[in-house]
Length: 117
Length: 111
Image 1 (cartoon, each protein chain N blue to C red):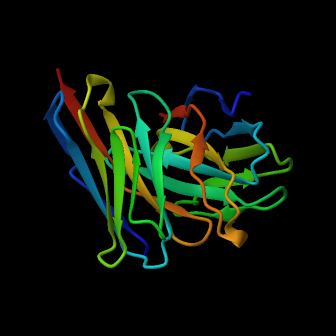
Image 2: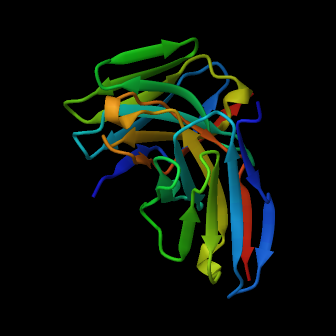
Image 3: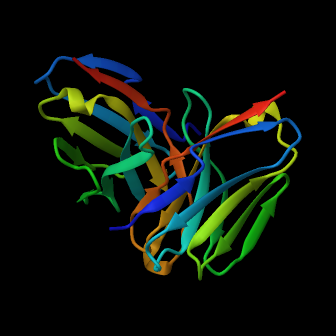
């Protein structure tokens, strides 16, 4: 049982390049999230998904796109990287069932440290 | 918009002392309040949570209290140990799909 796995762990991009971050979970969770973590700013939600084939915008979605073609995978794409996107990116998944009011904490991946130069 | 404020940003205690971290939230519809611990270079990990129908919850040396009227909740760590040194994040689920995180508290436990 691997939990939540993120790849890659580190990446350096040049401004304007594109890349995709992959998140995979083996816990059969419906809900998946992408956060970015910057010093002094906690964790900010980029996009999230409440099930296969669905995605929605979070607090800071600009410059990012996501896809959830399979329940276990949630992809984060950077179309044209900018230095402001230098950050640590965390994927998370949750067992929560919001419709029934069952709320549980997140399981996070190990993070991707992205530097845009 | 929804907001979670966390204080202090840095906390230094002597080993064996207690540590208290406080958070306030703005959305009265918030109903779930998890706490995460993040060690240096690692992922955040859930350490305790509390739901809006409970005022206090304890797990060994860690306890969380919730005051819904005042819209604040706190993390209490007793008998602190060096391995408690980490960044702690509070969070509030706003009744929908989103969880809003506080900015974090860096806890140093001095041996």
